Length: 306
Image (cartoon, rainbow, N blue to C red; front, side, top):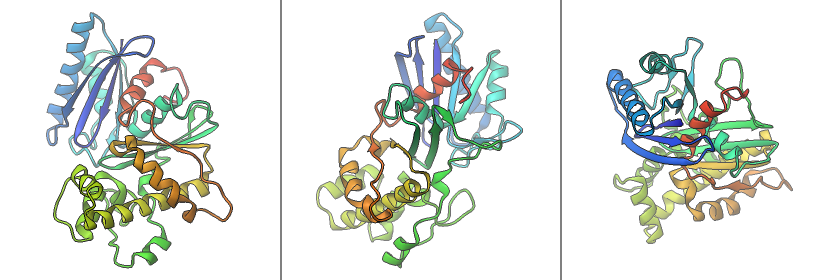
């Protein structure tokens, strides 16, 4: 059996897959926020319990929102409990088996490349809209990356200058990466909440803001219009610079049909003249498909991707 672990800023998904890649079970838990030891213990217990249920020593793959540095430490500012720790190595020691790990957006796109929305694409790009914003790029099924492992951090590109001219009062929000005005600070789940407050709304959750927009609230309408312009501008820049065959979106919003209708009408404004936008597709395996990709890391460990 193969176990996928998808670590997010607020939730962790743990799923079990058989040798044919069929999901057999899934659990979702709250992400431990402070103690690293509690984090390692929880993941160890999840794996051990699954071993008992399935009478096997499962192969483990982990997706997380960050990168592994040259010493194997996880750099994941959105998950403070694991930031700066060797989670992969510590779990390998605890479980007495190999553990595979990669960026969660890489795992998401790996999943969508295998029988998903990016299947057959020469050059496929993913953008995941969650607690943060992740990015991934695959060329002929292989991860496009450098020796330092930090490629495709699209969420940390700057916001479009034309957008700043259109919205002169738009703040350059500080980002956890140390920069200001990163795309992530506007189009992540937390970014949507920031934008709602910026246009005059009271503190609301992301789903509540979308619900207010669907009910016609003016402040929510102003917020979503701004949000969608920023997202379209970010995607337009990536399409211009990289020319992908397909873009797949992940995260909670990615399964909403209205998102793709709205983006299709806005994207041409942020592309060069007479350039057709690449198709922007919802994920076949759901916005949280990174858990399947994490299991694929272990299932296809010999591939160059992992």
